[in-house]
Length: 243
Image 1: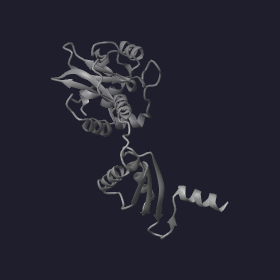
Image 2: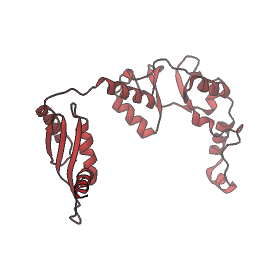
Image 3: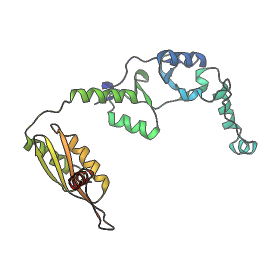
Image 4: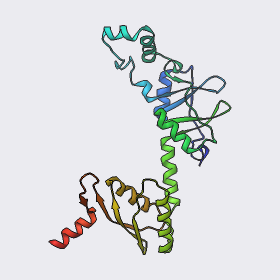
């Protein structure tokens, strides 16, 4: 999938020369947490978010520091913080030259940028002009839509088992385990040397189309001590049988 498949094409933006109050009202009226900022030629020049309104002189929340720390920080940064807390125009508080993506960028690239830069939304541009915006919410909506479309198809047990084995073979962390499938119900057994492998194996199997249930009979052998731990499912059965 590409960015154009999940982005929001109709974007509410604001001019750099607009007032900070207008930006705040626009965000509240449209129930959005960020606004792209454009110049008079409608080209993207920045972005303003809820975070830019946290430390404002009107609220009395501007950053305060001891005098000795202000001396270390220097006048330049202090002046920047003053402008951000007291500026009256959007261009004075916005983040200039924001990170952007194009319509043809992959979702993998989009997520990498969001994670590495800790960004919640990215403008989508074409020749410098905005054509949309994509946010984490867009990704969640895409995931929900795909989940509705991807109804598990009922296949023969041998086909389900083959898909599970193929999926296991594609994961370097996955140990060799026994897989039995009966009527779409999967029984997993074998030895794992890290308890976290258990959850990974179960999730892997659950993602194979046609799987109805997964029963965990995996045994964890702790490498340092050699102690053996049964699955919670098997321990519950043993406890029920003994009571």
